[in-house]
Length: 482
Ligand code: FAD
Image (cartoon, rainbow, N blue to C red; front, side, top):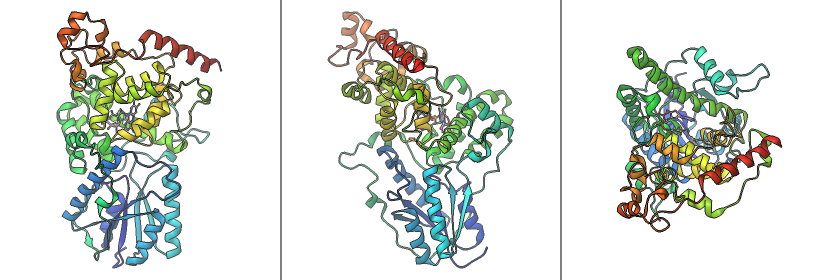
């Protein structure tokens, strides 16, 4: 479809140039290409606004995208408003012939793209959705009753049985430039915090953008993948890809991860177990997204209705202590402080802190989900609530109700030398390893030597483990019987 009328490419959670089906189609059409990103806080369907940490990431990622587009002769136009209004106005303004985008298979986004399609039909402009956000579209994996699968293992087996997805597409070498078009200034969107500027830890920890995403993946598959299946549980080691925010913003596509992993497994069959384990983690992201497709209110509604009557407690002080990393349980506090500083938390520790909130403190999983939503740079509409519900026991393929993680044993098992705790809870840096996960059993002399005064420079546990566990089991029993 060669045309002198511009082709608009609408970027969303796909802030990359490679394996971008919508951009690829526009670039190969030979038409002038206008790349557009819309800050849409207006479309009624998009009820959930981004959290603080993801807004910060978005700003950096848009800058990176602007720079990579410039390198191939393109520019990124920034506009703000309801997507259907913005796209229709721009299409009229530039007399566009086509608009393309990669579909996000989630109810709110699909409602928005329906509005965009209708607005473009009125203008007689072509609307072209592409598939590019998932390995397999949710509609392709259904039970006989037409529902999505609720158990991970059969879900992942189905995906593996479908064979390789379509090959990733290359980065366009050159874009035909479009006439200059007015764009918002990124800084006017105020995505980054100023007063106070709390993003120092994020800047220190991350380089958003496609180039870094590709580098992280290469690095993992080249070296760190050896032992991944075990190391991924160790917060004291650098054993995982750190790809999650890059994946969240589509700086790298699941197909690219799939092919890179498959290639590495073929080259190094001795590491195939580790590589397949890594790929199955990406499968959990896929599973969560498919779940969200079926359950758009996943962040609000218990998947298992028996949880609707769960006796959650309201305890603002305990919730605050948890958020601030002041529970008196070193592994929990380390995780919550890692989150506050760097915008992520190790997966094992996410499970421990989530279990602590929901089970030891009996605070509704939605409170934890909301806090993560605001503070995680990888906060994902599917993975976040799906994992919270998994830990709470209210979700799909959920953890058994009687699994109440013991924060002391979890610390001792997965951070045996206290390296992770020492890093994030410096008050405890001089505690001996055998005591670091339960400083309250240390003798007065041991505490003195380590410079720790419980209740003064590090809190005493806000709840005793055994008591918390028993209370949780009682509460869970009412739900199971209810
Ligand atoms: P790796 O081990 O290298 O995994 C590779 C990729 O697989 C990740 O980048 C991620 O895209 C995906 N992945 C791995 N584990 C999971 C999982 N359990 N569920 C879904 N996808 C997974 N992950 C998010 O991306 N966003 C979230 O909002 C999120 N919230 C979570 C909340 C809780 C309570 C828990 C227990 C887990 C949550 N996770 C979430 C999953 C997981 O903790 C992170 O994906 C992982 O820690 C990211 O580190 P990595 O990229 O080094 O992971």
